[in-house]
Image 1 (tube, helix red, strand yellow):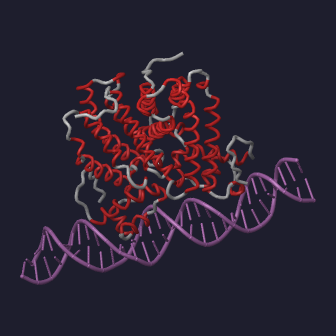
Image 2: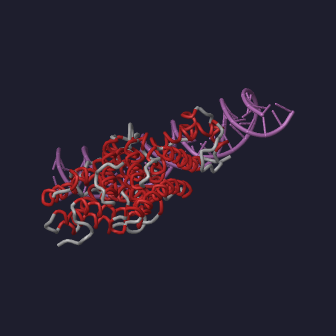
Length: 211
Length: 211
DNA sequence: GCTTTTATACCGACCAGTCGGTACAAATCT
DNA sequence: AGATTTGTACCGACTGGTCGGTATAAAAGC
């Protein structure tokens, strides 16, 4: 049926199981090396079901990117960092939250969209676009808080909210790559620390905690 | 013969042609989607030659990572940013140089090692290790200049040279991913700008030019 | 009882790797 | 010097297996 499903809509169990399996396997093996049989086996679903729910492997990847966007969107929406009144504290809270969820194996905390992008950006435009949307939609939500923080506090060097939000995405994506290189979440956390320090310096609030 | 060849040693023409082809094709299609026939066709070489020079596809990828490390090492060693006497100017010059070479298609300026890493970090340890070595060897050369800059100028917030050098690698890798998402080098350049601003702020030399 | 979902068998294309062989140059042996 | 062996680079048809996708029928759910 291939529903677009930008939101976390209810869906048939086989479809959800396949998407949940894709979240894990795609990050472990990438797109090309992931076989349809892999996904079916991990989901505990028959191959016929796969092609009933998805037009093909590429369609599954597109749906996986949208599913990733929806599930992470829900995770971040429910996170506690939205509470502070000062938007700058929300931005710093976001960064702290990103650091806090860097735990376990890289395959567990890295980004499905970023992983897919690397492999498919030239060969599978539909997947690329879905992944790009996932990343930039996420950036846009951060951008809103950065924008408000600039309005309240000002910022150094003519930095724009959009640019800084995208830079944050870049730092995170790059941190995932370093973590994959070493197998260790700590190196990713270190880059997130640098990002936090940078934001603090831009807003002339170095290091110190807030409310 | 599968020589390790950390340096840019002379090698049989077929081997070099295959490695040069790999630099392009691996960045375009990734590891799994690149076929041996693809590489042979692009290199203008017969399949038998491929397996004469490499034990298999995985061995080619390892050799490609080492070749990438050697060729980029030579490129950066020959770059003009080493001239300044002040190590901080060399560090900033390095960042400017990284920005200057962001031109054309993402497949042309992105990193072979980072691309391979994403796909192979869990499934092909030999490739992962070769890519990690390429990235961290590169970081180590930057780290030397950062270390000297800290010795001369001091740095804010107890930042270490090793950590900052690795953060620079993360920013660059992440910038490549954003560029792949949009197909545009400009978004990558923007992240490199942020990195430069961050380093300037850390060394209390915001924006201004130097010598 | 009819639609939706699942299970299994199967197909054709493709792909990593093999194998037998040629070309040629540098040693080695008369 | 000439013949012979050895080692290396290179070639391309072939193969065994894999993978995306299809066909079809049973089972489940309404």
